[in-house]
Image (cartoon, rainbow, N blue to C red):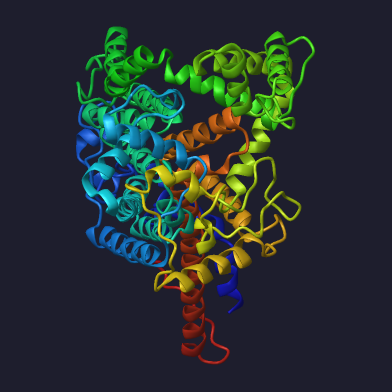
Length: 613
């Protein structure tokens, strides 16, 4: 047994490295991994020794060796298992709760009502709310009428099922391992965040699906090099923008994927543009491939986005992206960071107009210029300014403050990004400006799963939506599975959100889950297909950083990327478990061989090896 234990301890790091590179063959045979050429990470062909390889694949510069990896179909059993699990969990969610509304839901419902009643595009809210989600709601209002809440629930939970399937497909494309694909897909299928947002009249669920579809096509393009797939990723980025402005930043990831493909020599417009004599690509070939790749990465999204942008600028008098940027920058610099300056002319003008409106009785005495709605109302009543004009003033004030205080803005962005990632349920367990943790500003008494969410009367959300009761009749009576659903949610927050962490490194088990996702990110850098994982990390980082920089601590803005985080958690968990299992099996085999040899040899006999061994 001691020798078996020694055999287990010695190669643990080798088992881990073998699991990371999926090269258990080389480790088990003892051959030199550097001398065993491998096919692409996603190639379905088995690995073989150099002598068994075709001659053209032994030459890295040959035309066949530079071809993209042939696609390997995802295992149907894994995908169907994930889809069925997601179907059961989403059906349980719909059986346990009605449709929910959130303060931001009011804007989408108003825009959708205007579109459904009279196709009204003359609404200033379109300057800060893209038309994708209101258009979807308007179609539902027109088709289903009083059944609209049920239709919204079914459609969004169908999107949640699709999100689980896409998560499993992305994991398969990155690893070609059924275990990682199954773990990531099942965790997404049972994620409380994914289920909860499917019950809300918000853009999180539709945006999550388009974002995951964009990432899926990006990873496929990275492996296959087909520009049609890159064009589909760009199309998904454009659709994401129509749901949420930050979706346009997915074009950066599409462009980076095109650059990777050019410099790796992969493209459907000619696999190998190299000179067969010198083995080098000509500069003209690189420039041509780069231009074609960037066009495929950008053009489809522009085709989708341009019509709405031009129409909105013409009808409402401003570009949606510019006015929305002004609106959110003021929220970040003035509302959340509470920055102030005596040399900021635009901020001084805002303070002066708000004070004039309060003195004239147009605003309550407790009105604060740090609230964006207060500023818009003050400019409208005192100067007759439109939303475009007042938001432009707020944008100038916010940009000047950010230029004056670059250090606090940068540190605040890092802090807000961390808070957004560490918040387990941002809808109702996290208040703006508070940090997740024992001392954070959490509303622990709030319970969105309760029926009290829809209490009627002045000031309630139901009262605000009274004009839309014809198309969105909210129901308040409990359903059959409501007590079980509420108990499950409360158990989650009692044991995952508020409980002490297992290892004492952070404040809660959920924050430890985020740390383990980071560990999976480190392990992904040791894989052969690290470039595909870098593309996924680029999408996560850009979405979190941009949201934190523009909007401050708004954790629900990063809820759509939580399935991508599950990819890293599944990779780390499966890799470490596989390494431990392989090491333990090796230990048992060594121990059994040692025991059998000691029993077969007589007492005092010395076993010698044959002379020719």
